[in-house]
Length: 288
Length: 261
Image 1 (cartoon, rainbow over the protein chains, first blue to last red):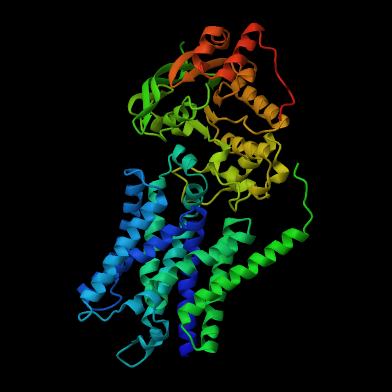
Image 2: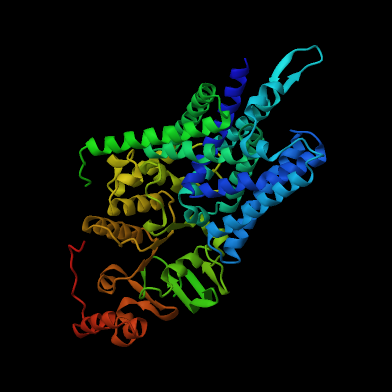
């Protein structure tokens, strides 16, 4: 049963991240996902500090707001200070992440959180955090419920906002010209990424969230020709990485989150090589 | 001029404190094919962007059909430069053309059968119907441009604003676009096109706006093509200047390579 809960947690994180990551990649914002996943750290620490416990919903949302705040600062540096966007990203997230690290070391006595846990996650501990009813019935681990709810939110967001996300991703200028707010869709997506990062950090860690945000969508991008297929396929790659990662960790007796992230890279490499061979063998069709 | 499609009033746009457009003031007639011509970096694209509200104005205003942009947005169709998007995007030709049917009102609704019919009809007009399920990365430059034109046709607009639609397209596409523009004109629509090629400008357009950061001239093409104005617009660009001289010498500008790639 332990294995089941760990794999389920990993899979939920992987699917949440893969769905949102597809949009990040297509918007050439993969590194913004990286930035958010680091910059929510001070938010998480402060949330712990104030609430004294994990996973109270208002605190999660508070921490997620910090992620959105990060993207606001990045935009500000980029637009107003005329800094290159990658430099703006670099300044913002390293700075916020460093503050988070200081907060952890400073308040180490008061909160049940350490650097290792934040960076690499403790997915193996997930099954210990059971929700138990008064009658002793176990409802399953708390993180699974939270992640499940997050996934539901994301799927709803993507299916309702499909057209808005599509047009503002493909051709933002045209979207603006017909009166669709690109700012609204930008920050909606950023909020979703922030929320996902905050709720997943505990299981896979702040850094490894990035692997799930970027690698499965990039793998899918290599082979698809349609956005819907890209969303589905990147979820499948995420799911496969989570499952195979668990057994890889079991085999080598290593970090589960690390093994899951490693598997995303393995799948990418396999697909990349497969794709190279396929295009080499395919005869070039002349384009009229 | 009684029927005015577009008016810019003392329009100034600057980027990094450097003016890109300086005090541009003109009125354009409705129901004509209008070319905005000028050398590279003369602010042609910026002018279109400021008309579409995509660029903040330093001063001045734009009126379309005598109204503010937001009131007439649904009557305007904007065709951006085809280089402005990523053609490797995982989308089919149909997906892109259907975007023309999007509006702030129906953004959360599903795409209807009617939208699909309109999109198919537009694809038929640009001769791309059999490509509708193809991924956009598999198209040639001319086909990409025609996809953009088809998308704008589905909007059923009264004013079409196109940014360099003739760049990097094949002769067939060029003819197809010209024919569509004529059809639009016959239906009483106004077409505004940014164009950089002086040699073809006289054949394509009824009305010409010469731009070089400042407005050099705006009027019916017969009034615009004279040595003085062209030199003013293109002055300083030596190789272009010699081309202008040659054009002016021949007076009626017959040079035109039809099969230009």
